[in-house]
Image (cartoon, rainbow, N blue to C red; front, side, top):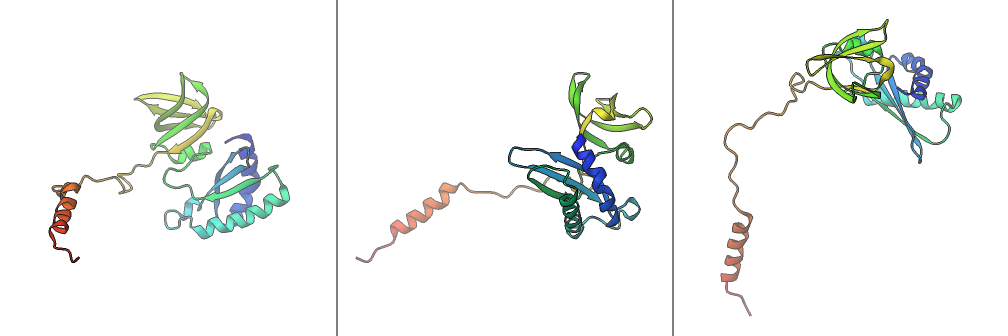
Length: 197
């Protein structure tokens, strides 16, 4: 998370928690026409998987947070507030979140290149909170990244485990005639009919 996003997440975290939810993190995306502030919320771990974030949760958080942002005013200029559930490709914002997803694959963007890479994809193999590092297995080798150097990280969904992997069609494909054949026969029939003059 950027410094601004971290500041905003720290400011709004208690408000979201008071609503019985968890603020996973924030993305602050400045742009010439106005910034976007995107908040990712989830239900507390002890209530998962029985309860999931729904549209009502997002609306409640949006209302409360908007009021707080109006008072605290941490963003100068126009901005759009978006409140979202993490989704299956959930973003990771903290070392604790990386630890929670050990063994899963993630797509990671680095702030500064490391081993000539700015992007990597691999399994989250270890988290060392003391050293502030996350170890990924990339191409069968360990890749240790400083948490402070991680710009963005998202879980890569295991579509097969979710039961959402595309399946190959079984049986032969339906036969399709050429488009020209159908039109041609219709035209011939119409041309062959006598016309009243």
